Image (tube, rainbow over all chains, first blue to last red; front, top):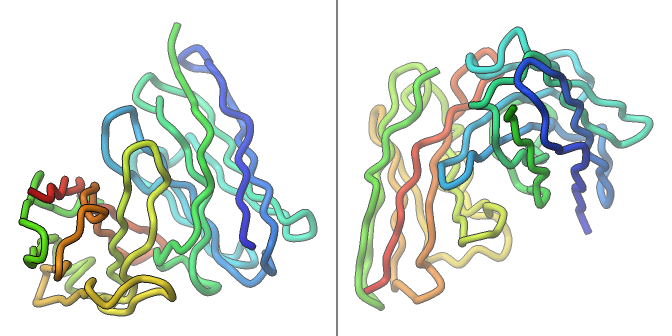
Length: 121
Length: 110
């Protein structure tokens, strides 16, 4: 059974940093692209970032480019999101998700339960 | 990276069919066959319903179908059931390792 378990969400002040982690199990982690998708309270889904199977191709939403960094450790079956210079508008539930196939193409077939990031003074 | 455009709401009676549209551009929906549709019930994580325009993951009933025409994708739900009441989101690959979502459509089963 595919499982994605996020951690690291917290209440943080504007301008500070936070690192999210996602522990994956139940599949060959290095066979799939991975993505972070967020959802602000009461709002829709927003794609944040995606990484291909070997970290060779990475993409970011314009809203986080230059501030967020996605990475993965295939040996640990883990996905990460380093978030710097956080803003109030980054407040959201952050989902760790699995993409179908090795490339970043969307096609997200599994979702974690999310970890909540709140940016407020 | 502009969000795809979906109608905020749609509705239908049990047993009827409803179609939800998702309008993008020639740089996303019009350029790639990587359109996906997700259903999200309140308080739950989204679920993949359609991928690559018209393919259904295992376990998704054939009441759900997808298509594209130009820069617009569509999701049709036939034989509406109470459990279909949820928020629906489209997404598309937009090139250069980027993905874009639609704003979501709240489907109400009357």
